[in-house]
Length: 317
Image 1 (cartoon, rainbow, N blue to C red):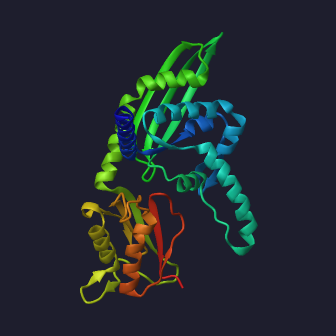
Image 2 (tube, rainbow, N blue to C red):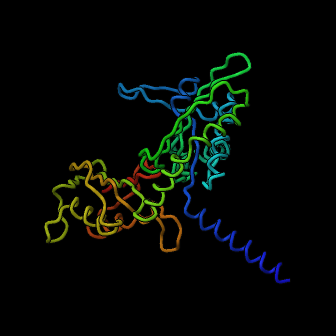
């Protein structure tokens, strides 16, 4: 009986230890790199005021290239074996397809929304880090050379946080096994860089961008309109609030015009008061409410919000 009890205690301790380690690990999502998508014909393009814009067709890539799905699964397996949590891109795409059908049904009621493919995916998945995979295969007879490149970026800021690459030559292994082998042999530093970056976010706050824009016809001038008797402009008030409520008084002024105020590198608490990861839009509602209370100006949620970018429109009717 004592042995059984001791074994149970040991298993419980191991389970708690595993949970504690998992809590210190980021959630990742693996995407095919844009270069791979473009090389294999899975990019749409359009002209946006003289600039060529690219739209990745992820659903087509999964349907028409089983190889790519296999490669992504191989990367996910290596990372989850090292303790990373994951969101699965292919599963998310299937969920979004069902949701789009519902949106089309609601379009007559004005409920349909339009977002970029990447932004929509990231809003649903809410990972900490996005991992982009690019790979190439050169076959000669029954053997092949397989090269790969992984790039990890902050899902909220798109800042690169880690990268690694490698090649396995003359292999006869199937793609998934070959990739797992070569990535596992190269990924130590890559994984550690992601973990270190994630721990920095937990300790020092997640970075976001907050933008206020004046509505058309509102007559607002952020640089000249004042609040109260202190001669603080709208811009001054917003900057002071953001610095006061961000981690370590972070938050730098970005673009500042009479029609727009941008605040960059705003670090918000990683967890809210209930211990859940802080949602940037929810955190930014504080400055939205404070500004409305001081000025009487109506502040609405703006267009173009992404995982790490919050937009507000001031002076809407």
